[in-house]
Length: 328
Ligand SMILES: Cc1cc2nc3c(=O)[nH]c(=O)nc-3n(C[C@H](O)[C@H](O)[C@H](O)COP(=O)(O)O)c2cc1C
Figure (spheres, rainbow, N blue to C red):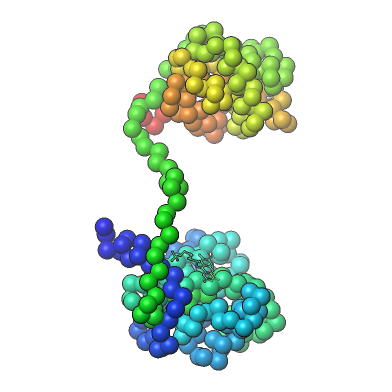
């Protein structure tokens, strides 16, 4: 494993420290890593107050403990140094920026042999009168918010916390393993209706669904599954486009991949939005999601939507969808 990545995976929160003060060179490196954290639009809204002074450390610990509701404990676990990180709320990404700076510093601390832990409640701490007074004393703008404290010190000899097992299924890979059929090829001449007759949403979904039934992609029951899916979650995509498709139950019964498209020039009311293009998707296996995605891409493209709304024949529909795919 890459040395840097390994460092990030072996960092643990340290909650037992040697009383010994850390040296300035180590502290500087940690702060330097914080200064170089990424920030939204490079605004650098973070401020770092590095507290080595025992009096100030004690004051912050007491304030934090009070907010925690346990006034007699030291929430900083005896760590000799506390870095309080603030970020200017004038920056819309301040909370992310401040958190990222603390993340950078935790990893840097581990890299230089220090133990660290993020200690919460900085926001509340610096909303108190005492907190506000400290901000003024330290010359920070009134618009800053406390993001967190990073406690630093040499880990106690017997402090070797283990990482909790990582959560399963929290990483999803979407790989480009298979080439899926392009919407332009799936949408045949038989699958486009230029003048839908339905007047409401269920009728429009039935009408579009009937196309994939007639194409023998699915049985009649698929239409009910589409209506159920619609009741659970609206398939209206925006820009006048809806992509009706079945539930997981219905999808298991798809025999052949097909797409229907019904155009409603007057628009069908989809929960307050007007859909002029109602697609019905029935895709075998992973074709299904890919076709839904292709239609979602089409719906985001104003010129494609306009061309589909204005197409006078099937060739014009094909021309509108021809360049939808990045690959074919
Ligand atoms: C936003 C945030 C707030 C935290 N607040 C506290 C805290 O107040 N006290 C504390 O002991 N640990 C705190 N932690 C540390 C977490 O408990 C710790 O990161 C977590 O248990 C995972 O352990 P690890 O850092 O060793 O991977 C905080 C961590 C984060 C990210």
